[in-house]
Amino acid sequence: MIETRYKNKTTSGVKTFIKRLFTGSIVLTAVLVTSCGAIPGATECNAVVDSFMQAGAAKDVDAAYDLFVEEMAREDIENLILEYHQYFAGYQDITMKSISVEYRDGYSFAEYNGEAKYANGKKRSVDAELVKLGDNWELLSIWISP
Image (tube, rainbow, N blue to C red; front, side, top):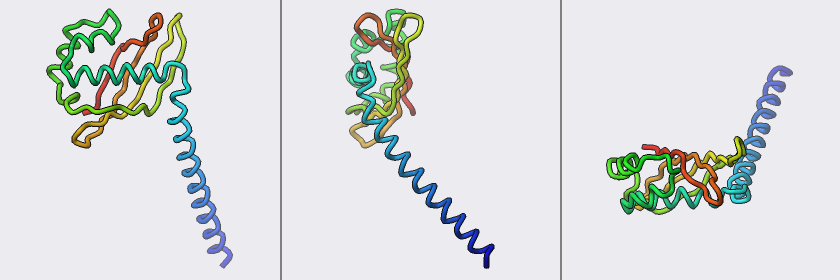
């Protein structure tokens, strides 16, 4: 009897702990997601990624190219947009999921993660690296999940 009670208490205690931990994780995640806009550069980075996705959907290579650092080859952007247009077609909007911004070597760098939504209901994860040059955030790289 004592052993059974102990096991039940332990199991109950673990379930309660997990339930509290899970609830805390939801609250913490909600706070992090809603506070992303408070991180310096977060809103601007989200706008750059959104603009890139819109340019890709419109097959506007020049507009997409203008969002990247000048070292990026225009041909690479053109190939990305034209050869992989299915990743842009039907794009509607993006929601920032997380961002981290750090200052190093005299520049601010951001690692961005968002979720792109499409007209057909599909969602894709989008990861980007950005750097702040002067007053503007520019893309270093972008990855869109298949």
